[in-house]
Image (cartoon, rainbow, N blue to C red; front, side, top):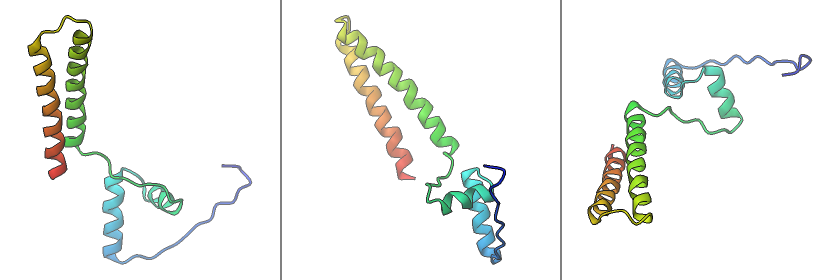
Length: 105
């Protein structure tokens, strides 16, 4: 921000319920109150941080994806066995099941 640009201060009053709601939303996003409100004013998307469950799901999907890629490479190289292709389909089914379980919550 340029030194000559003047900052404007704003004072607002909130009910205890509004303040608690603001604090919960800020905590969920991992932002300061100021950063949260500035993003809202600027029309930017404000999302909650991913839960530990979602982070673990991403990691699991990443590992399964690596296994599927290895199977695909062996299939493309012509060295895969039929059970390798079945294993790839099974792993892909696991990914869908994990995503379904999280979406259900």
